Length: 86
Image (cartoon, rainbow, N blue to C red):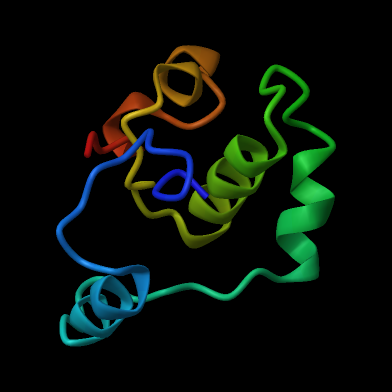
């Protein structure tokens, strides 16, 4: 969506980007699970539903979300040592 709206620039198509990410086992693509959706209810400080799902998944996996979104960083919901900028 960010690519389509021009908010993120890339020389790769989404399909090409996805294929490249799959080549790196250290960057797994995590599935969205019900536990993430339940966790979202506790993340009211984040207004954007996509931000909520990113944060909830990061909390479940105890892994850094790859996001440069300052709202996720400033929320305090995800420990600062778990937030990685893009």
